[in-house]
Image (cartoon, rainbow, N blue to C red; front, side, top):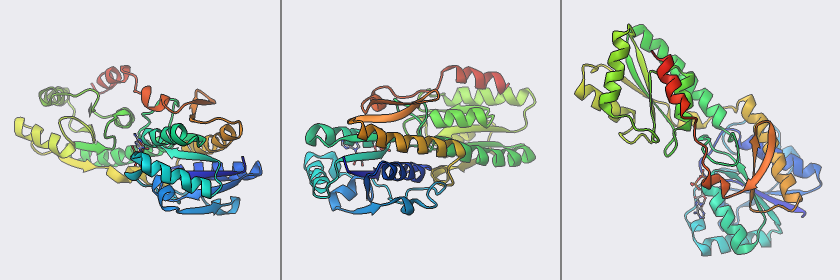
Amino acid sequence: MDTIGVLTSGGDAPGMNTALRGVVRAAAAYGKTVVGVERGYQGLIDGALRPLGPRDMSGAINRGGTMLRSARCEAFMHAEGRATAARTLAEAGIEGLIVIGGDGSYRGAADLVAEHGVPCIGVPGTIDNDIGGTDYTIGYDTALNTAIDAIDHIRDTADSHDRLFFVEVMGRGSGYLAMMCGVAGGAEAILLPERPMPIEDLIAHLRKGRDAGKASAIVVVAEGNVTGGALEVARQVSESSEFTDSRVAIVGHLQRGGIPTAFDRVLASRLGAAAVEALLDGESGMMVGVSGKEVVRAPLKVAWETRTRFPESLFDLVKLLSS
Ligand code: ADP
């Protein structure tokens, strides 16, 4: 294999550039050529390709976002779109493809392998840390720290004014990130898609805290919470209780940007290089990840078949420590 393609796809995550640097520099060190594909699978359909050499990666290690851009691509969900993509790859002489993204992007890659025999390797890049095959995904640690920073700021003002705050953090289908934000931010309660908490229970919990002498409180709400986001939860709490003077903060897209943490940079550097090595070993339809301290490989489907969940014991811990 002489020429390797690389793209970033789906939701962007801090550290994607670091992973890209890992791919490009490792490939160059092994004497291979790298072609970057812009805007994820859309770039394969449009033929938006550009050569990437080691010097193009100067300054990439700590740059947030993704210099290749990312996109969601409807056309790639259909067989004709993937056939166009396979043609683009063949015409450009790209013999293997590295996909940096989440499980949606992996499904697309798995289709490309099955339908066109293009060797594909997945690198986990998503802030949600909810996919199988790896203990950690690139971007999660940075997003968590960004949210914690926001929560720390909010706690200062919540304490100063004896206020109840609802803080919404990202995570549409998965509450992993929100759970960890709640634990690390010392939240009084955490509302997640996986474990809905009825509003009456939340109110009872807030009353208990107040009766125990807590003047302020922070409730972390995952974006995908089934009873609604932070604004809706605040509205319902205010309608059904004496907690009428709450405030809402939505961390939102702040969490996606920013300089990747050292943890994410190390992870992305390792996994970017590991993806190249997997391709050169003749692997296909696999993802790279970390298990404990080691880099591991797993079939792409492990990403969506065994989703990473937070330990249930964390719920008990939050209860224990918020008393
Ligand atoms: P993520 O990779 O972060 O999970 P998405 O779920 O948005 O993000 O997926 C990114 C892209 O991957 C989609 O826009 C689409 O092009 C492709 N994709 C997602 N799911 C599939 C699927 N089931 N089959 C083929 N391609 C898919």
